[in-house]
Length: 564
Image (cartoon, rainbow, N blue to C red; front, side, top):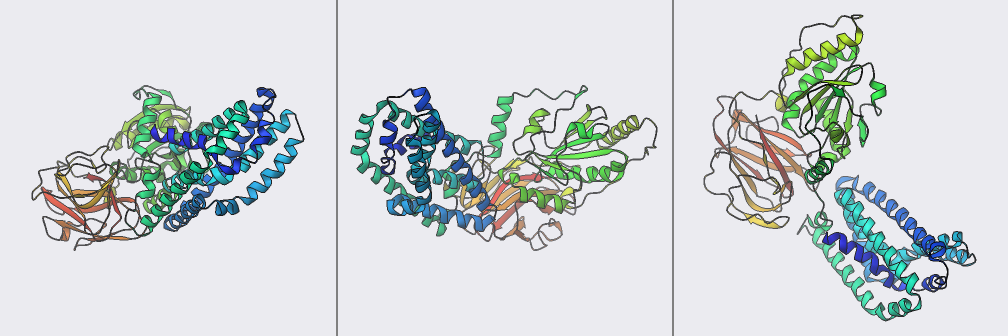
């Protein structure tokens, strides 16, 4: 709430900028006219112009971030330029000169008209003429949002900023000349505040460039995590528990992107048997169901089965389309995948689980559902039943069931006691054995005790713990875990986009034959993308072991342990 208020206050204060002064006398000249016919059109024109400029800036920021690390460098350069513009009014004037020139022409044209149309045009002119002063401040908000990904929170920041600017302008319209004189007296203080903010921004960019705090920009907008967003959406929607009774399938509307297919809807799928699979690519339980889904797709697609993978992200990096596309390619998924970044389809189905399977008959009714792994025979038999119903005996549906065997992370879990899924962000962290108190979103030193109890984990080194992950600040840090289970998986990522080296040990020695698919027998591995890594697969009896991963490079990010 504080950041939203400050964004609103920033919008209010833009009226005290010196570059707004030349246009205000023209606005005050209309203060004796009807507020409905003059004031409101001016406010609307200004707000519309701000919205357009902000939208263009947001799209540009998203385009920059699309180039991964190079995009971050470009965004840092943008921040540096904006900071210098705050320090130097002359530079700000040069950067925004095209907007000012256009605004001036619009203002002259609007001044010759006393109609509602003229007032609206004057509002558009104010929007452009305000840009030299509002632009750098608004640009900082947009650049910070672009570096972390667009979300509802950044949209609220922009909305509050625009509301603040409209509020101050409405006061100016009502107050007339008195407001103008007050602005003149406040110019000195406003200039010093702008320059101080510019110095802080330039200093922050230098800190980032020197690598002293690689998470500075992500903290700039206090980005909420995907988990928090989903929790909020779920509370607002108040979903009821999914019923096993037959019900009409909800629409598949709201996907942010479709992969392997054009967008699908219920009408297009009428007459088909549809299996909707809610999954996310770093979820080990989801990965273990994939061999069955792929086998069913291969066997029954020609007979009318359509499998739709609804990718509902658990972590923020799983919203990135390139990451999901890469995972779909690597996993060999050929059926349609709907990216459900806003959880629109998730909430329409009132779903609460990864993975979750919903079988829909040819008339669009949900006839079967299953949550989690397992029940593959039951699900396939229901697929056969629904296909037979759809074809009414016109084609033969074989009764034999598919036989699959996953490899690597997609292999079935062992029938043994397993440690629980363990998250490394403070929002859901449990069983952390490091004696130090977690310092949320701040870099801090952590240490590991000499011995860990079963299902305990510990950090060692300089780490920054955010809501959904732990990020290593300097090389040489490690994570230890005393686990039970055949397999150990860890969701990892590289914050700087570069390959990062790591070394794994089991009970203090190289894993040897117990190494997972993503490391060698010596325990060496490389983080190349943000995904789930299989680090341990015990070849013999699954016994309690002490796992340790040491990162030889900084900027590694760890999200969650899972076991099999």
